[in-house]
Image 1 (cartoon, one colour):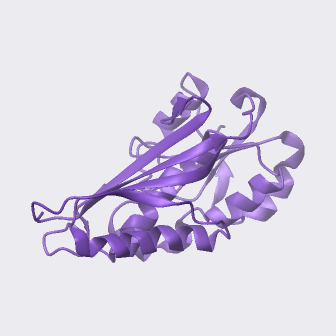
Image 2 (spheres, rainbow, N blue to C red):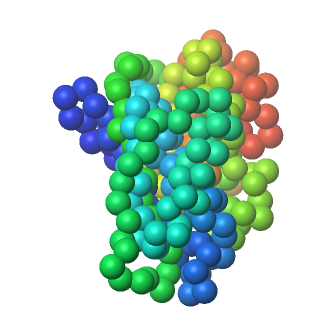
Image 3 (cartoon, rainbow, N blue to C red):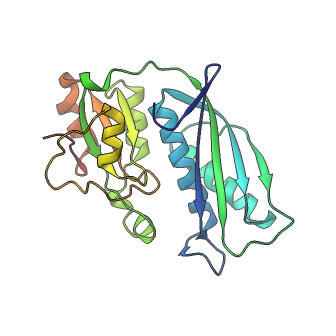
Length: 224
């Protein structure tokens, strides 16, 4: 289990974004569509990590009514790029008080579809690089491509994924394995993964070479 909440066979995952958007006082200036797309990206990646399939989305908009359609557009872009149907979107907007900075949260409700393999029975790799803030926008080529991840999951080329959050790779690896593990030299152990710009990928030994060809350049072994 990572950050998901399991309730009666439902998988509930969420992510939030603050001070990123189009307001004058935002720390990172980015289109609202981009902020919402990356928040939804994290929540969707955590659905996959838990073996879930997205069936509904709740959008929590603290930025004002005029931002709602742009946030919905960003969520729609994510699912469209993955050739996935966009789940129904509902939610709420803060319209009583005007905020100085942008803020939103995306919660995805899904159905548990896949059983998860024991992490100790798989070989684990890092896909993508940990990035935050402006680097997410300026270095898209370093970000794990969810289209490739989805293809690999659909074709059973990989068994599991595990998104990297703000705690960094070392902390996420400890959560995954329940203990500290010797990470490959050169890995940025503590750098924040921001909006899941990198993922841990678990693969059966027999499929490792196939996975290396599929994922390409930004794909390396996790453990020495």
